[in-house]
Length: 274
Image 1: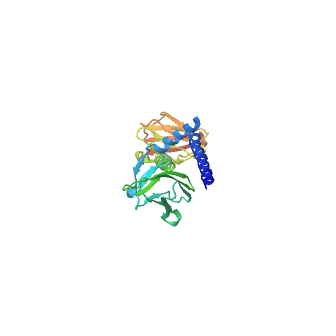
Image 2: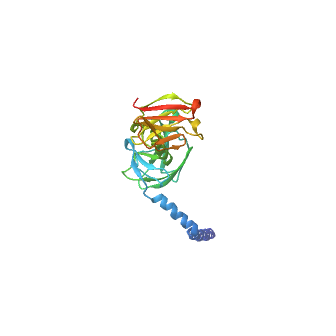
Image 3: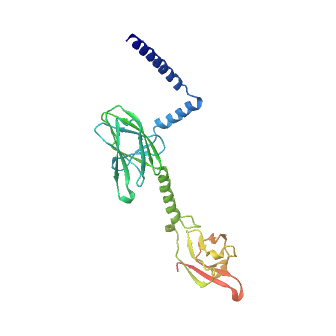
């Protein structure tokens, strides 16, 4: 009996010595490890952008910081992912006191996955990693006695960029080449008569200059000469070619485009307001 107690004492002493030596080794971080934990801490604890979305949803900008979602016992936190995103894995640091259940919403061809998060008690902090078909979410979970975020969602940088690109595309589509202003600010009331292989496809004015757009076949070839009809005479005014666009530094009323000589001559008459 005495021998057994002595052996147990020696064994326990050895365990205590081993346990005492482990934390010292674990706390010795290299320079890179220290720098890495500092950078990770900055990402984890930075405030970041939090906005209010539709139906009271709390919106985080994905990837900016590690979002901290506050939950409460006897309540549920609904974390909604992007529609069409397929969840592959949900990993929790504390799987005993935190529960996560899946739910879905939306049409079958564009369903959104919801993660319903429930803590068992207040004062808990853990982390959750969610891998999907599109990205990986790193989320911190906290439990509070009474306060919680009922609905949580995300804005995605690529979606924001896509929305800006769509807006820019609509603006560019409404801007007529050459003039660089929206079409509703231009005067297209020009009529043409005559026949020519290079007959302009459209003519318009911004009130100061006149723009004559020729077909693409004119590219690389000599453009016709422009004469402005004024006082019964044909006069040459300043103009320049930009590819297949003739920019006239004048708001013309009547003009003639001429190419070639003799029987091979081609002529287009232009009249504004006709």
